[in-house]
Length: 237
Ligand SMILES: [Fe+2]
Image 1: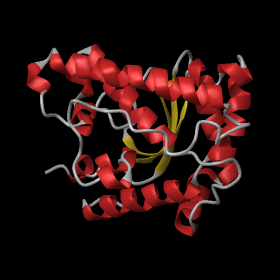
Image 2: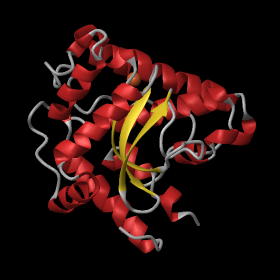
Image 3: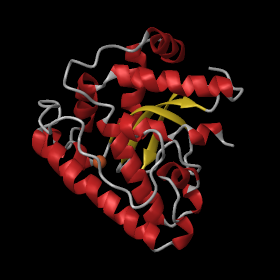
Image 4: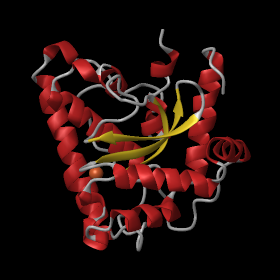
C-alpha cells in the first residue's frame, strides 16, 4: 500500500469530498469564493474565465480522454497522476490541469486575510530558506525562470524537506514524470491566462502580488498532513 499516494486526494478536494477519491466522470467544483473575492490582486474577469472556461475545459477533455482509454476506467485523479509518465498526453495534461486548478483555488483567499505560516511550518521555511522572504525569492526565481507555461511549487520533498520546484505545462510534483517529486503545499499558475488581463507580460509582478492571497492556514494544514504521513512511512519530517 502506497501511503503517500493514498493520502494525496485530500490535498485538492473540499472537505466533504475527502472520504473517497473521485474517479471519472470528473466534475468541476464551484470556486470556494465569489470570482471578485481576490481583487485587486486577481480580477473577477480573469477568475471567471480561468475557472469557468479553462478549468472546465480540462475536466471535459479529461473525461473524454479517459473514456477513450477503457483500461483507465475507475482510476482516481491521484492514481492517474502517479502513473502520468506512461499515460497518453491527453490524459496526463488534463488530469494535471484538473488537479492543479482544484488545488490552486483552495490555496487562495481574500487579499490580506491569509494569516501567517504555522509555527512549525515557519520553522521549516527558516531551516530551508533562511526566512519567509528567502523562500519567496526562491519561488520567484522558479516562477520567472520557467520558460513558457507551467507552475511553481513549494513542496515537501520525498526526503521530508521543503523544496521549491517548477513543472512545465500542467505537470505537477505528484507525477512520476516530475523532475522534483513531493507533496505540494502551495502552487502558482504561470500560464498567461492566470494573469494577463491585469499584469500583461509582467509575470514577476503577478508572482510578487500573489503572496497577498495565500491562505496560510490551508497551507499549514497541508504541511501538517504531509509531514505526519512522512513520519508514519519512515522518512524524516
Ligand atoms: Fe490556469
